[in-house]
Structure formats: structure tokens, C-alpha cells
Length: 611
Image (tube, rainbow, N blue to C red; front, side, top):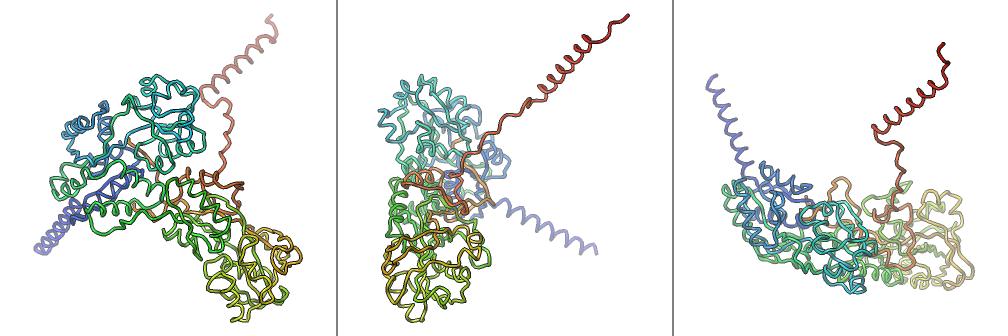
């Protein structure tokens, strides 16, 4: 019995030792919660795994202090940081000399058991940026040139910059001898809003990071720091010395990245994540493959920004309006409309950045009641499509309806129209939404009607009207079945007479809004952004600045249909509630004491005199 127990204890000890060994041999990579840090952390993770070392992460931390403490505790083995941030975190003044800053952090962090590996090749410094047209209007190219006019300008900054004692707003103002007329302060984890404010004209100057992808994509001008005020923040891996000594292959893998990323490259990588919506992991692997550090990965990462749209919308005024708006929102990017029978599916698969779709695309229409998908959101209203029902017979005699291919608006709405009009009609799908293809299906199936969802006056509808006895019909009976309540995204519209061949009278039908749509935020895994101081989906939501630019670029833009999920950037500002009376407890107690005192004095005044 004793031998058996000993054997069991020895086995358990071996398993425990193996588990501990496996835990020690797994490297945990950390990241701050903003795009650039995510990209670099994914690069570290990929390079470490390429050496056959198990790597976990990247694990995001909300700020520098928390991730530095995790590194010192051993919860994290390595993460990307900046030498300037490293100095500030240990109570030192940041320096403008990168070599001196690096030498200093190496000296100071060594006693903590931490090692700064070779710098990656770029600096992500603070800077001031302006819209190009505004800078040209004011004749400003450097920060010094702001001094004489700053009192008439609004500066947009993050909250952290307002309080930084060495490289923040107050020392900047003192160094350049200027005071801005107004400040527009945004939370640190929503610092991208600064670009929205610059684009909207709510701020004249914005505090930015010099490797932000938005600077180039939105055509911003980075003002010259002609007095060299801002310290240098050069990116470098910061690792536990014990981990590097235990796994020298890890040091070799990460050191290979030293000096390989310049500021222009980093800005382009940031743009692919923050603007194009690509995952940080995909962008990181593609960049490493381009450097020749790993094999595989999509290195052809400069494909045009794609907007998927129904073929019935691509060659119309709505398609052109969407394309112009996208080119303005994504300045300097090649943008194209890509025909697709199911545009939103292409966005969900990461094959397009946005989709131009009708409102019904946001709903699952297979059940008795429509169910809205929360995966996508509308970012800009572009126009309206009309539901055209053309038939050989009266509506009540329709026995079969030809619709477009699977995924098209007419294919989705075909069964809805049949139910809504009380028809026992079969649905026949054509191979394409062209007049020729739909007429061919009409004849082959012996169908009675064709359903087309397209902007008013569309050539496909005109090509069908009058052919094979087809006439545009008024949707009699649609309202009687409470369909306007059941399908609130479908609204009553009227097609004027003679819009199409053989249409001699007005036709009352229904229409729906056409919008630009993108992926909605995944609220199940909320993260924020942070600058100097998990694998994502293939496409991420559009930044608020891009949404704003899209809306501004579409002439006569209307509000998005309230039945659709819309981007947060389009939500009206919440009204500020009036401050409560006597909000502080000490004030309330003081007021109560004063009331009691007044009552007592009043009683003394009116009490009967003592005899």
C-alpha cells in the first residue's frame, strides 16, 4: 500500500512539474488597447511562435501603468512600449534625444529585471495637426505660427494631454507663448473623436500622434514642432530579463524586428487597422511577410477600398453619390463599387468595407415578423428604392413571381409581397437582375409577374415595362393587411404616370431607404484606444470621423430610417440634465441648520413675554 501511494505521489509530482514547466515555457504577450500597440504585439506573438515557442495573447491592458505592473509581476513577458513613456513611468523627464532616452531607460529598468530590446525604427510622438484647407487659409505650417492667432482658435485634445506636467498642454503653451481661445477635451479612450472635430470644423487644431493613419487618410497637415518641444517616443519591445535568459530564441526572434519599421510604414499599418477595418493580426502577419521575417500572409494589402452594391445600384445616381462620399471620407484611397447580389454578406466576410443596400437587408424576413440583425449598422442615408411589381394579370390573379438572385432585395421581398397581398404565389429566382434574364425566367417558368427593387426610373424596370404584357401595378390591398405596421421600413410612395412605358396612370406602391452600411461594434468584447502613454474580426466598424465625412459628402442627406441600427456617431448629443439643487451633503446640512436657526429666531420673536 505504501509503495502504491508513493507511486501515485511521484506521478502527481511529475504532472505538476510538467505543468509548471509548460507554464514557464509559454510566453504571454501584452498590448495597450490601441491599434498601433495591437499590431506590434501581434508581430511579437507571431515571431515568437515561429521559433516554436508557445505564446499567449496579446492580452490588452487599459494603460501603461497597468501593463508595466503586469510585466513586473510576471503576468506578461513582453509588450511594445516607447522610451519616452518609459522615462515618464519611472519619474524621469522625457528627452528629445532618442539615443540618450534609450540608454537611460535601459539603465533604470535593468535593476527591475526588465530589458529594453532594440528599437523598432520609428517614433510615435505627440504633435499638432490641422485640416489642410484650414492651415492654408490661416497660412500656418509650424506651431510657432499659431502663437499670434491661437486666441481665436479651438484646440482639440485628449484629457490625458491636458494634465501631463512635462509634455502636455500647459508646458506646450508656455514654450510657444500662446493660449488657445477654447479647448475641446475628449476622453483618452475616444481620442479618435479629435479627427471628427477637425473634419467637422468644431476644432481648428488637434493634438495627435504622429503615426496616426488618419493624418494621411484625411489629408491633415502635421505642424512642424519648430522649437523641438515634444519629447521623442521611440517604440521598442520591453521584456522580462528572466524570460529572455530562459528562452534565448525569443530574444533572437524579437531582435530581428529592430530597425525594420519606419514612421511611414507604421502609419500605413495603423491606417489599415483604424481606417480600413482590417484585423491587427492580419496586418501584422502581412507586414512581417513583406519584411521576409515569416512566410505566408496576405502581402497584397493595397487593394482598393471596396463598396459592395446591388448591380441595380452601381450604375445609378445613388451608386455615384456613395462612391463620391467614400472617396472624400477616405482621402487618398482608391475606392470602387463592386457589384454583388448580396452586398452585406461581402462586408461580413471582410471582402468589402461598406455595402450600399436597401433597408430590408438589415432584417431576417423568413418568419412571420421581421427580425433585425444587430451585426450591421447604417452609416449614411443615400436615397430610396422603389418596389416595382409588373404583371400580366391583375394582382389577385398572380400565381408566380420572378425575382432576382438569392441575396437581392427582390429575392428577399418576394415572399413578403406575396404574403402581404394575400397571394398563393410561387417565387422564381432569375440568374441576374437584368431585363433580359428576368424576361427569360418569366417565359421559362410561365410566371405572371416580375418584382424589381430599384431607384425610380431605373433602366431595368423600363426594359421590362411593356414587354410580354407586363404593366406596373398599384399595390392594392397592401395597407389593408397591416403591412405598414408589420414592415415599418417599407413606406408608401407614388410613381408618377408615364415614368415607364405603358404606364398611363400613377401607381401607388412602396419604397425603402437606401443606405451605406458597415459592421456594427461587437458589444460583447468592448475595448478602447490609448496612445503613447484578441484577434479582431476581419472588418471593424467605421471610425466616427469617416461616418461624419460620408454624411457631409452626400448632398441633401436625410436622417437614417429609425427602424435601422445606425452608427453611434450619428446619434444626437444627449441633453445635459440640470444640476440638482444642493448636490453636496455638507451644503444640504448647512441649509437645514440655517432653516432651523430662522425658525428658532422666529419663535423667540413671537413667544409670550415672561412675567
